[in-house]
Image (cartoon, rainbow, N blue to C red; front, side):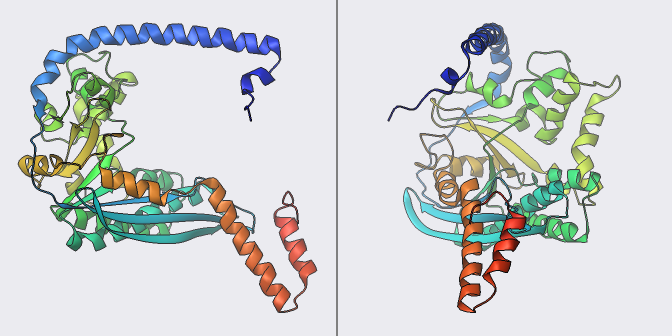
Length: 388
């Protein structure tokens, strides 16, 4: 069956207008890419000294990766906001799968509560379950890989508090998540992989000398994709020193918006640490985090990795230099790709879960000879669009 193209469903005049817009946008982007390519060539000499060859390691470690997935939207069909989430760990030794562990959970909130509060708390709860599952893996692996930054959950929690959506329940889950994260950081065997990186530390670093440099709006992953050869690693620490990478991303943001006349680095530090102060959390662990970019396969962009400073660079290089650690199709750790595929949940699955709840309610009422008309009215009032 031939699938009809959406474009041809529009009136011809509207189709023509969209073709014109597409042409204009293509011309604009082509020019921007050509200009950026010229700037890349100028930058290469400044960045190349911080790119090193990734050593080859003959050691094969037990690698565990933990990831979670939650329903992309909440269902409100039963008078309650429902969401489902799944967390999992996959253990690999080389390319051999040794074990897998999964957790499933349901999130529910009253409809009267804020949608934003439900969304933020759902995110936080999912991270909490993931961190607790990761702690269980520490004694069973040589290297543990988290999906995302160690402290990434702090920022949605700060937004929740600023919006007045933060209560003792959220604070308790936040503190438990933070406590588990600190244990993982101190374990000397845990790293984080930032798959959807927004890091702009290179542009931020260059902004200290030239505020309006062309890289303040370009993510580092794009910049380094033009420089880094196969089996190489880029050290942020060698470029920017001991300060967290996030501070230099803040500098890039300031350079593109509201650059302070005096001491922009101090303002960037203030912005980076504010979430910890707002939530009354210790920031020492955050200060000790470091990042590198690793490129094992030249056909894919580099992989951004976060690690605690207590893990020496030599040790990290040995871990990352293992054969078959990275997936050639994604340039991400193989174990992380596997668990990500296993725990993925779609919006449709949430609807199917709620339908299962509805079906079981109807089945129980029928067996107990309850009033089926009341059930029908209950579901119809809560979900008038759903046919019964």
